[in-house]
Image (cartoon, rainbow, N blue to C red):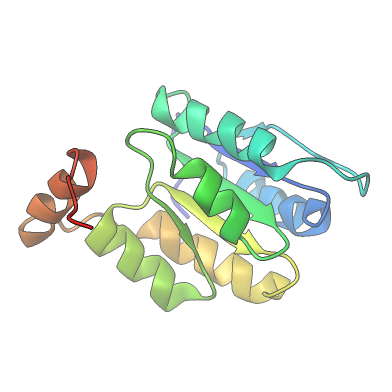
Length: 153
């Protein structure tokens, strides 16, 4: 993980405080500044609130990347992807992390605390942060994600 001046935004719902804490500790140990939007306890909360806070920080340039944790990672990804310019991906390991950065220029990594172990999540996060976007042939595909598409029924 290569540190940068722009923070990495973190958020989770009630399923993810332990995994989020481990990811935060690894980020800080590697020298990354962190914006932590919560939550920090087991009391039931609504995951879209945290996904929107992290996505808004990335969207506005206040954070370089985002990391979201819920039970499966899916709800967080769905909520975050509603923001313009956000490409949130659910990660289960380092191979997905590398490919989604290289090919999709993903800017938010989502993890399922009930699905993935801490070490695998840490490996995936390291790969996510270390992998640059390849550009080239992938640029036209990303442009299509940003453009309004009228899809026939």
